[in-house]
Length: 380
Ligand SMILES: Cc1cc2nc3c(=O)[nH]c(=O)nc-3n(C[C@H](O)[C@H](O)[C@H](O)COP(=O)(O)OP(=O)(O)OC[C@H]3O[C@@H](n4cnc5c(N)ncnc54)[C@H](O)[C@@H]3O)c2cc1C
Image (tube, rainbow, N blue to C red; front, side, top):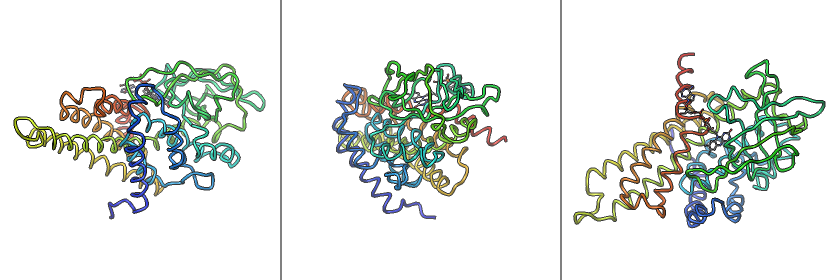
């Protein structure tokens, strides 16, 4: 077994990390103050190929393996988490369904523009009355001739306010439960009857905008059905499973940044005539952070490798997501503690991470849902 990432993937990581730390991070205050990502940062991300991480080269993307994508996500996690959220919602859950299930015509129509960031993508399953209970969504897609007519409301949809394309899950046969749902490619900016509601005011991850998406007799061409009719729920679970590995990797990157900041602070901040890193209480917090990082990294690497081997990762993706996101919350808390009062101040990246990371235990399946998936798979 070789636990080293291949040289080319380490290079990818180095490039993304440098972009996040040297280009995005200096603009973090601006993103926080305006709740928007400066367009030139998005263009910079596009130039690096971040919008095309999961898009095959033949459609203009970088076409990385799961291991490669997750290596990039770990580096993405080391910078502003709102910025990382925009990219990952696009490159992960926004794109993976189309890459996996799309017809040649659908891929040619959308993927090249998605790879350049011209068309930002998102994924919509959650509704006001069904979050964890995604099997009970109500958005209805009724077939009428060569269109499906969509009615219903999705909420908390990442990237919705800027999205050129959304993968939307809707009910096509109410009598069949989860076997009566389908996935659709919806262009919200171009489709009459689709509107974006008020932008959510969130605790953190500023710049990563989410909102309601409302469908009122919205006619979606039948050619935009993604994958087989009525099998959309199964496909949605597949999209979310893949996304979870990426979240584990992003969490690992965020923990690494928090540890780096904490070590630097422990070496330079003096109290009682010595660096606080000399105190065992502080050393133990640093050690706990390192343990969290090492275990989380091994998990995402293993699951990404399993994806590349074509293995079923449903259980392990949940193991990796649960572990890394729960660990990240602990690490963020420790990082505030090591920083002391400074860690509670708005101009400290530690304070920002403390807020931003909280979302990762909630979206793409809460921690409780990850444990349900793991337990059900053990008992099956
Ligand atoms: C900022 C943000 C961005 C998001 N982006 C997207 C997106 O792009 N696309 C999208 O489709 N969705 C998105 N979501 C939605 C997200 O996936 C849901 O919020 C999440 O799945 C939880 O659903 P809920 O909020 O309805 O909480 P609920 O399902 O109401 O859960 C509330 C609590 O009850 C617990 N719970 C629920 N059921 C069970 C059970 N069976 N056993 C034990 N505990 C249970 C949960 O774990 C949680 O602690 C986003 C959410 C946020 C906040």
